[in-house]
Length: 357
Image 1 (cartoon, rainbow, N blue to C red):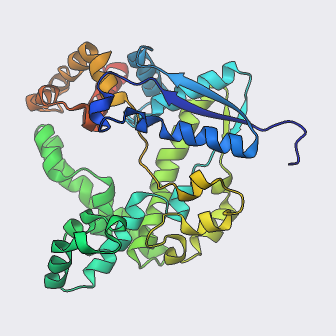
Image 2 (image 1 turned 180 degrees about the vertical axis):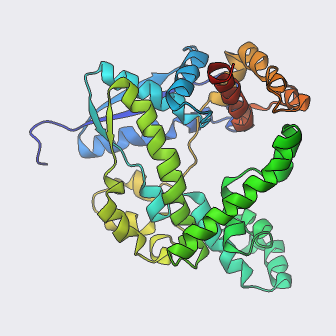
């Protein structure tokens, strides 16, 4: 309203791969749902919107290699490639500063795990026999679509704050030992113990007692600082682009963290408080939309466009002395709908080539 010309907004979209219909249950456009919403929001606010179309035919290995060089570590989130391409494209458009929504999910309970963790806490207050009875009759519930069945399966696993927190963010010891050789496999127990001690220290120093507040604090301390902000910095600054995050203004964060978790996350809605606060401004498509994990066609692109490079890179991992030969079995067992593990190994292989050889 204050500007004489429209605000510029930007988003990315993906060219659909040949296997995406299978991955997304015959609806491959799910991985472009964010792009569709971005267009709707642009139309609602009258912004000048531009969209970058990303294709698997681009040099994915080369882009991933640039990401690894920028990060200096095997940071394996698939969104890194998207953000790097977006940053380079924005610079070509003459853009030097952008504002992003990073942080809103972390401080206002917008991730699926926030709502799921709240449900786990409620279930843990019930006797086991009553939980079993409720789970057996879950299809008869009036709110069955708003209660994740996973909460039942995890309610008995981690009743303590720190133990439960580690189930959200780390691989299991079994997974480590299946992939890693010798001391690297046995050391994971030590790493896990050190990680739990670190979490205990953070929680006690900040007087956090509830699981949900602990989860949000962990997101703010680890996910935002060590993941989101680092990713934004490492993918934008090489292109000469500055990324600003209004939600992470320290005074605003302090205020948001003082709000009770139950006020921020509703039984049926994530980020309930944030949605209510801006309900008169947001288009309906945003107010009603559930939070989805970030989706992309990278799973099929691995198979469609760079499979030979993927296989060659994974087969070098046992030579590092870190991975067992069995890691190569992941190539044979690969399913495009579950690409995170293979993408992580590919990233590690490229990092090892760039920095360790």
